[in-house]
Image (tube, rainbow, N blue to C red; front, side):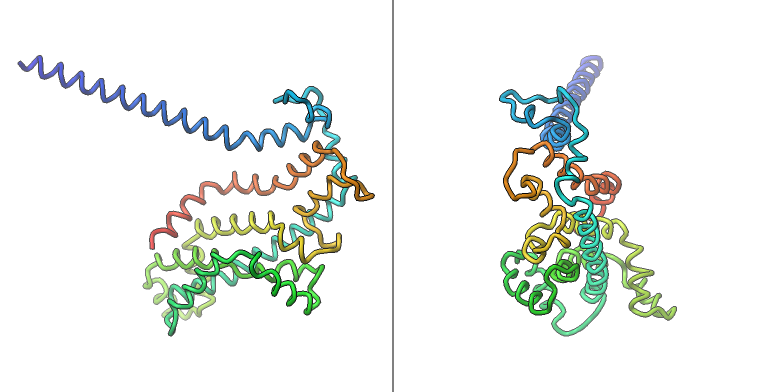
Length: 293
């Protein structure tokens, strides 16, 4: 009887192990398939940026260029003022990033550690702002910026984006997860509100701060709608608007230059991709901490 029981236990263990292996293989296979679907558009854009226009228009697509054309990247700068677009985008994104970090940290401190009348009601208004796209408010924003003389200026590009409800929400949730004893100890040591935020709270939520900063950087870098409205002059044109100009000649006529457009798109997304691969490990940690409260 004991031998029969031992054999039955062994068979169950072997069956359980086989089931786990099959499940693991299925999970890895599904993960690989999903990864390929996600990365293929990026691969196609990069490969197409080195093709000729004739090869891109072939009825049978090629997964690898027959001939490499690195001069496509040089032609991008000849066809449009891409260097200026890069500079404008960097300045706009940096301005949005710094302003949202400052306003977000101080507002999150007030909503998480402060105590004032109507605190929860005001925070509900902040959450409500998350559901209102800029397309709804762009007319009064444009009239206000135009009346202030901010059209075709960096300030006009940055000002409507200087406060982010998303940034406030994420930091507020993380600040709430930090015990109030740290804040009380800092007050005993003589730290003011600025010192508590910069020396206590912000260093303790590094992962969330990096996560929200990456999202803010990506949104600012890819911003299209507002710069299209407020920046009419080429001197303040950003990358997203500049990419659209690549399909036009200097006379404004539409041309067939998909290979150069792909090259411009690769250069435009390169900073975002690099930052994502460097800081991706912080993103999951940051979102999980924000969800704790």
